[in-house]
Image (cartoon, rainbow, N blue to C red; front, side, top):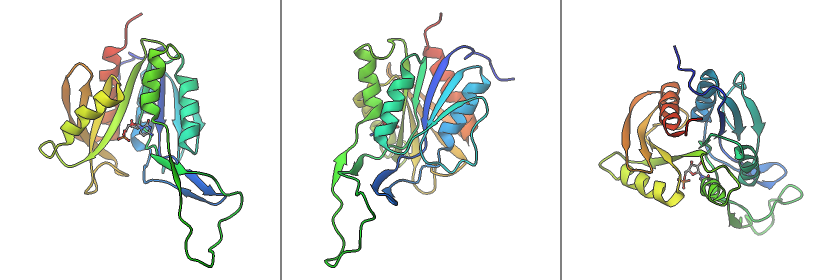
Length: 231
Ligand code: C5P
């Protein structure tokens, strides 16, 4: 049986990919399937948590049971919803694949082919939502006790620097836990299985067995629940 250790806890999870509009019909996007974030939402709800899932574009066929879902398109919308819903959260998990850049402006009507060939797309940098949540916790916008979890998708293997990149990212973002996924060569993206490591801010590193995203979700929640203050 699943532990019911998250009863009464508030868990906020982002999942899927952002879409950054170019014009009314086009966007810049990514291949995120949303599977890991949705698996986390289902697992947290089954363990008794009150879950809000902030979802971008996914290949998920439906909405998870017993979860409040908020749909977003862009990174800017995702940031607003995360800050809003994370205010009273015990655990916040950023599993979404957030676009690093967005078009500087959204054309009001469909961009035409033009006589001079393609028009350049100018980009602005999106906010780093995860780092912003960590800052919001320091300035008192979020509760001090809120556990913040990030993801890192890195190509390569343990010897090839994946873990080094993960450690550096954990420090840079300032979150409590970082789930490091090995991606590339058909690993992780869009598949049902996953593997990697969980790194903690105090230097613990746990290898995750290769397995389903459901199994991965429960291991991530075990780790997050173990650092949530009691009471
Ligand atoms: O820097 P990188 O994109 O590798 O970091 C991945 C982690 O940061 C993920 O948890 C992702 O959800 C989050 N992220 C974010 N805002 C961004 C880019 C990534 O919150 N603009």
